[in-house]
Each structure stands twice: as C-alpha cells, then as structure tokens.
Length: 193
Ligand SMILES: Cc1cc2nc3c(=O)[nH]c(=O)nc-3n(C[C@H](O)[C@H](O)[C@H](O)COP(=O)(O)O)c2cc1C
Image: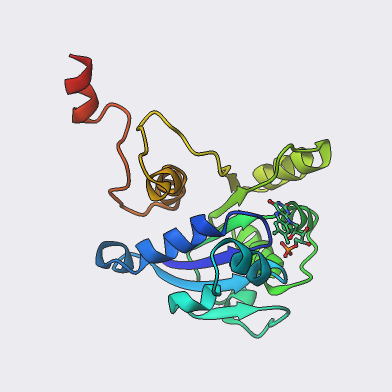
C-alpha cells in the first residue's frame, strides 16, 4: 500500500511518532510505504510533544505548498491517505474544498479519486462547526476515527494506550497488525470461563 500520511497541527504527535516506529518494523514495512506531508503547524506541535521533528523517522517528507509533490495529483497512484492527528482547521478546509496547502490538496485528491481517507481528529470539546465539518467529510467518503483510546484491554503503558487507537486506524486502512487484544480473543474467553 502506498500511504500518504498527513500530520497537522493538532495535539497527538505521540500517536504519529508511535505509528512511524511501527511502520519501520518488517511486518508493517512489507505492507506499507509512507510519504509524509506536514501542515504549517505540525512541526511546532511535534517539537513540543515529542521533541525532534517528523523527518527524524526517515520517511520522505513534504510540506507547505509544494504542489509538485506527486500525490498533489490524482494521476499519481496512491492507495490511501491518513491524517493523524487532524486539526479542526485542516478538517474545516478539507470539508469545504479549500486546498490551500499540500496536505489539504492531497486530501481533496484522495476524496475526488474515491480512495480511502482516514481522519483522526483531536479537539475537546467539539463545537457545532467542528461536528458539521466532520459530518461533511464523512458524507464525502472519509472515515473519522477519533483519537479516543479504549481501556478494556487494560493498557499498562503509554504505548499500549496509543496502540488502542492505532489498531483501529490500521484496521480501517486494511493493514494487517498484531496490536493489542481484540474483543473475543482466546485470552478473553479463558478469563470469562
Ligand atoms: C501545542 C498546540 C496544540 C494544539 N492542539 C490543537 C488540537 O488539539 N486541535 C486543534 O484543532 N488545533 C490545535 N492547535 C491549533 C492548530 O495548530 C491551529 O489551529 C493551526 O492553525 C492548525 O492548522 P494546521 O493543522 O493546518 O497546521 C494546537 C496548536 C498548538 C501550538
């Protein structure tokens, strides 16, 4: 799978950093090739939350208004796009067709080409504007997968907690993974009996 990974200026860089670590592991690297596109604020938030820069992960990085990037056009074949995390600003612009940077253009292309677009929003609380924009994206074919970790698998570390969200993201992108326990797994059945 050729995946375009958009990183916008919402809180949540630890999710993305963890995903990039996982995507370097052989089982996932064999399935997914990654190109990163940064919004104007992504690097600033990443530095505050993780230190360093998204380019440290070693994947190709594009940013700004570099519309010469291949995935700025539908004629370049990419299989899916993930925006993790997705700010309310970038969601608003995508929902209204405003392609004012490469990230929003890539999302616009993904939707018009009817390719999978998975968006992981982060804001709290949501205003009606946020909710209506997420509804517009959903109606246009995107899948909104909130950064809402789950606890029923009793995650004992921050990484395990992040993985409860990343597992759902990878599921919806169609990437095989072994993150966390699934409800109804053998271990749960043993515990129940
Ligand atoms: C440290 C930090 C955390 C932020 N967290 C959020 C957030 O969780 N959600 C959000 O929608 N915006 C958040 N923002 C504001 C966005 O970065 C800002 O609205 C920006 O214009 C988003 O545009 P971009 O995603 O295109 O970079 C945050 C900004 C900073 C500096």
